[in-house]
Image (cartoon, rainbow, N blue to C red; front, side):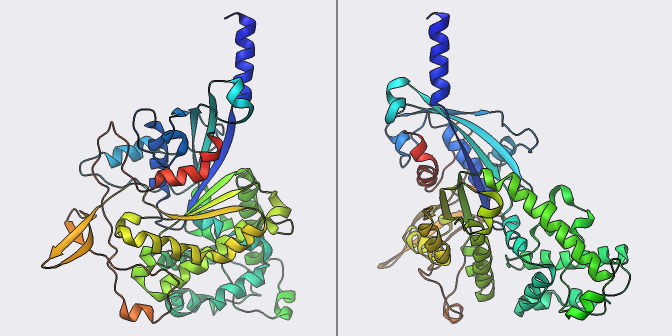
Length: 461
């Protein structure tokens, strides 16, 4: 091939290449690290193993293969894929350490085009897939952009009920004697902010998901910064607010809240959110079913908060600020391998009902949404336990402590349960270790290929 012919060929191939930015998010313990690790792993092995039958390009042998390439944004930490794989292949296997900040990894996926001009102009094309991992807690902060400090404070106190109110007692006691008009003492406000942050951490530990501000529990590079040292203030009348001098307690809390709005929340969404093409939201529905009605309702409320991030209409806050271009969102009920196979449909149905309001809005705005149940990395096997004339579906695996168990964990409700549901239904959705796997084989999974087909399948034809 002559130099001119080579240059023409290179030009055509560059024109055949495409790019896609996929945002991976989820609430606490939903399995983001496991999902990204599995996604990368499945695609890296796609050229040597038939591990993705529901990804059409792989099924039809048009997926040539994939490799890791340097990420384009050198200011973002690398996703720790190698460390995650080492953990999964250790003896005994263990789950990778969860990420606590934004991270990124890029894949080059080569395939044989089957449609349009690409089919005739080149034998192969490349999709560059940027996978961005960021904490779901940060999504919960978007509504702050539309709320004043006093509105946000009132909103926080209105939700101090039940378990949340019990956990907040220590902080409420200290803030109740704070004079909003007194001169601010930065050290004292930092101490009170620490007590408020401890309360948010306790909420997470007790199975509650809605925590604001989200950066307080996952501060990243902002840990210890004054911009994370504020808290909601009890209802304050307008006269008191107007009397508050610029060096007062109230003025400093308000100022830091506004700084957090603009320099943290808005800046983050402008830098990352406006660049995403596709998004997957991972949700662990089983943990709140275990924890009870209050935990389940709190997760539903957290998802509703996140849904506000997906209102992409022309009059939405997101559109005014960032002009987002996301055209597909996948909601995935994770840990499907923690229930028996006949419960998977109910698991998907439950999640779909939880996000139904957002689903209606997205459909109106022309955004494609879907729900599936899946397990990024399989940790159990399925079968039946037979006793006399009865046969009961069951799962089998090793607990996180290494104890082998076989059990039927319980029925998953196919619709949103009321408070009475927990009085007559019991669950045993326990945690499992990942299944052992060989270093030269793809990780076992449940419906990772279905998730890939929805998220990137249309870009591989």
